[in-house]
Image (tube, rainbow, N blue to C red; front, side):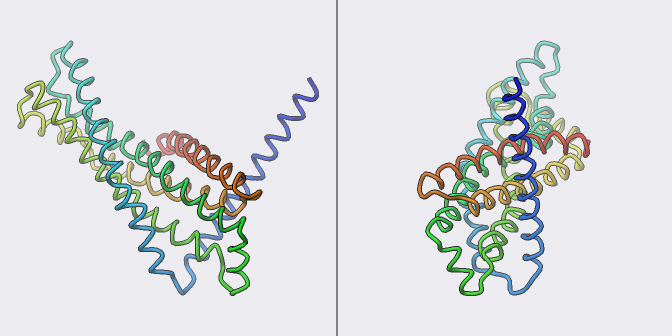
Length: 256
């Protein structure tokens, strides 16, 4: 029993220590981002990678999520004769919760893994040490452009996800089940509060910053060759997704 308690205690201490290191890295990224010069070229490349290159998979995810929401909402509302409110549920669900969270999870899987793998490979092949010998701060060169690109592109991706998802719900509600176009649109607008959209976008900004910080941290602390890079990549994705889910709960309690 004592051995089990000791192991649990060590895990908790290790987790708190890692949380402190991630927080310290986040602080360094923000501070370095305020210093000149800013690597504009790398920043734009990361915006394209995070935003443009991720848009197809986000769009595919969003339209099917919207269609599933529309289908299930219609079936439930039809029982009580309120099928005209199908669009309201789809719009509210996407803007308040599903759009921000699912977009962040997709980006965590795609961008978080590549970030941890790229930086981790540079770490184990001593390229990061080479940057330091050339008087280049690895955090400013590698982490800062990714961080600020994520802060900008996550909300933009979420807007696309919300719109495409609502179109998916429209396809089911209007084209399949025959809800009148005007009624579907009007009910969606009536129950869509602008503050819900804003709160959803605020969530994505925080999700993006946390996800990139965790992925960069895992890359910077990778060791042990190819196996270590693989472990860092896996850990970055899992921890990023868990952080998105936990922070989503906390932000929901704060914002709503």
